[in-house]
Image (cartoon, rainbow, N blue to C red):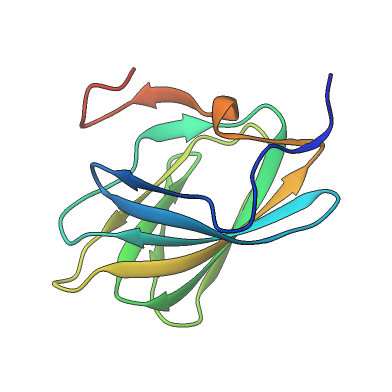
Length: 122
C-alpha cells in the first residue's frame, strides 16, 4: 500500500454540508479546516487507514463517535479512533468550524466508508 498523503496544502472542496481546506501536511498527518453549515451534517462514516482529532474553533455542534454524542464548541476536542464510526453536525445558527488533524499511513479522500448519508452519496 502506498503511504503518506495524497493531499496538497491548499486543496479544498465544496460539499453539500459545507467546505474543507487543507492547511498543513506532514509525513503521517494532514491538517484541515472544516466548515459545517447550520442544520447540516456529514455522513456517518469510518476510516480504515487514519484516526482523527477535531478541535472546534467557532460555532456549535455535536460529534457522534461510535454512537456517543459529544458537544463541540470553542476549544472542545474529540478523538476519533481508527475504524470508529463518526459524524459531526452543526446545531447552531452560525457555521461550525473545526480543525481536523488526520493521523495515519494513508491519508486520502478515498478512505471514507459511508454508512449513512443525508445527501445520497453512498
